[in-house]
Length: 68
Image (tube, rainbow, N blue to C red; front, side, top):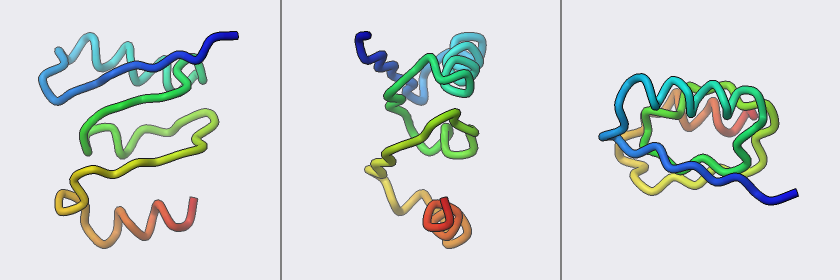
């Protein structure tokens, strides 16, 4: 089965972003590349998080990642 990778940059239209996030929640997307706006998404099976712009994250968000 091929790996599904989906970009979700900040300029993504709201309708498209909703579809992408719904797919991530259902486990259809294996790799989601996006900005801090995808932080609060509940993923079906999250295995890796890469944070490029850590300055946009607060202490509570970093603690939430550590508990996951």
